[in-house]
Image 1 (cartoon, helix red, strand yellow):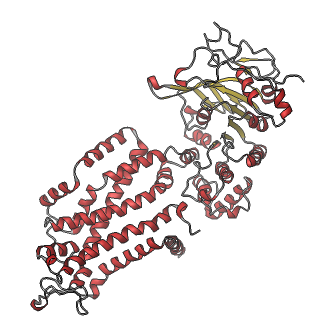
Image 2: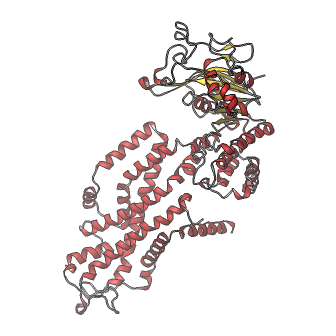
Length: 333
Length: 291
């Protein structure tokens, strides 16, 4: 089967010369139709930049991105339009992603009318109501004349989703879509997104820094872990969560707090050699994680960047030293 | 028919929103009153041009509401007739400079690169030239046949500072997430500029328009006062100039001659500036507390 979205050795640099920052460094990823892919990593690791490149909002400075098998910079006008509409992004900050001087009605009907998804303002009105109901904003008619500042963070985020749905997207990049929303309504937002996936057959790239969220949202999908612009490990979610191989993934998982204090107590602590993330302006040679890695092997890790290698349990790991070592994160009681 | 109905409905909504701010709405009503007085009033109240030696420099009375001037003519009728020129110049100058500033400021901020560098170079040169001396020189070199040309000249000189402000706002707005969302939804550059970016600057633009208009009023009155623009007839600026030359300021009874045009100018400026308070509500839904 042809991949829906494929990244081939994609890089993105910002700035010039001395100030040059390589935000994304040679990322290769394939996302199949109907899949949920999580992109996990701490802030500044390049996950949002990757999302924006996939959504076509930022041109990569190296490598190519393929949409249904075709490089997006080679699409003709008609194909580009189809791609442009098929891939939508949902932003992190619900307070910045809606135009403050437009009503919900304007926000939703503008793309509908512009792209002739409906004929006439009567139909646009009905379709807007439908979309608001899909994202659980009910009674929908109450929301149409509201301005963004009259809505809560969660409601705004739902409006953002409804706006993305106006163009019948096939692929949604959810860039930390729930991280700025109250914890109490996160789950209902996630469930709503999940329902979209099942009902409308939307493929998701779910960008988050929170592994617990990734675990909840993408248990049937896959996780890619990024560190300083590179993918260090990926694979089916259950494998990555229960049997992480890369020391960075292990450290991330060990840091996730568990609801059960008994469980937290039994969790293995990973002692990093340094708590500081290296500056993107001055990346360490070889594996960029080596100054912090507890399994650092001198003369190997700090010489050349380790390639992503497939492992038999599923997925890929960029750590030749530890890729076949099974580590239990729970200390047996 | 439908279009008329819709226009009337949206006009009604706008007026309702404007009335949320009492001070602003009072200013708005005052502006309407002054405009009506200056444009319709002259048809009902004839201009008093007859010299009456026995009535010079009188203070306000039942017969002459605002008193009389150095030739015994009625000041009230002169005030009624003298507003038209002032308002026409202010509107032409204000609208022209705002239009230039918004169009090229947005273009500059949005296009970037060479277009930006070119527009900014011209703007910076314009900004370094002191306005009033330049105006004085130009006014003495050019002949102003009518008020329109004066308005156009003032408008052509007044845009640079607003252009810079608009450009910097466009620069910050174009990086916002909702612009990215609009790009992602393929809404087109025209839509992004005129439907997403400009509406977010409207509050600022409208205040700048009001300030540009008051600035134009000052500038034209100053030009007339210096005698550089040979306007004849009745005009608040001409009145002020004449009153000054005739020494109206030195006597208790004649001081009204100089105070009345000043009062008219100040009242017009004040109402224009306070109207922006109501207009703010129209363009920035966040400010509406009436809802």
